[in-house]
Length: 241
Ligand code: URA
Image (cartoon, rainbow, N blue to C red; front, side):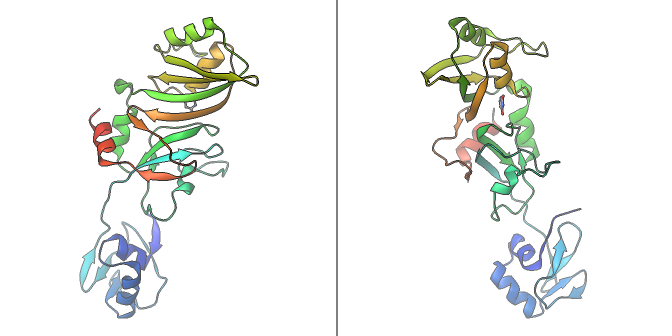
């Protein structure tokens, strides 16, 4: 089933008129839905199923590709719908994004930071495909300290709880105080909960985790919970990996 939207929104999505102007077209009797003239406001149509005509011509939504970066807060799932009804990253996009859009890969419920989102399936396939091994950089806050040996193991590759051996990671200790240590880590795979499990494998517990970059695409100073369109430069870079 396609999305169900108000008729004036549908007309605007087709690039025919603004929502306000679409309301006028409706009142003027210029709009038909499935062959029936509609003059009252508030009628809803199903995208891809109902046929809408304006001035005798069928109109269809313009298929626009969206490429978005979100600074995901903790407490949101990075799926379109959650079986436990928890808030999803889609809830953070608001009205402007009027099409079905999907996260590119995942961040855990508790993880913050850079999440790409798009309605372009080829783009998702490309960016998440293991053969590209795109670098992903995180800032991890761990409880307590970490030994020199632990850092060395992370750098050379760790065996996770399921036997998977990670490739060498770049690891930099940024700060240590108040019983916590802040570490910047760049990994090359995208296994489930990989960073948390890598630290667990060397006896450390991650208490905060934030992704700050995917390849050369950086979160920068995008505020938590906000999103922006990727620049054409960023889109082209990711498409040409
Ligand atoms: N590694 C994790 O442990 N969690 C994430 O969300 C991403 C990478």
